[in-house]
Amino acid sequence: MKTICNGTTSTSVGGLVSPTSTTGSNTSISDKMANEARLRGWNRIIDYKLLEWGNNPSLFDPDEIVPPTPEAIKAAYNKAQTIRDAGIDIPDWVEPSGNGGIAFRWGSPGHELHSLEINDTGSAELIITERCLVRERISF
Image (tube, rainbow, N blue to C red; front, top):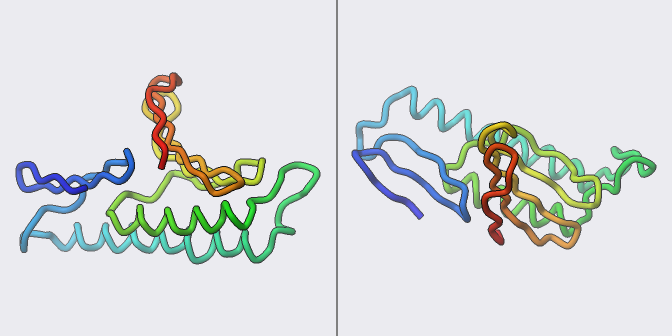
């Protein structure tokens, strides 16, 4: 969903919200460059990290973690594309959850943290915490 207020567009996807560039032809070169950098960051996650995990599960030590399952990787791939296309910033980190899933995280644990948790079956939940307390859980 997109909301426009005072010439600024805000994008929301399943509880993740990110302001995007100014509307109309007033988009500055720096806004365009920032958007290109955001797209490159998402594409690195989608085209390299997630595909590499799917193609090479031996990257993970089976004594330490359960590697992401094919279902989790497929769901993460699709959700990452949706989030990228909605204009949401790249996450601060993307890591295997250790139990066959994948976690995307935005924010700071001491303040507000958004964590998209994809489990081993491909189901996903967005968990929003504030000051280390769970504020909201949203099926994603």
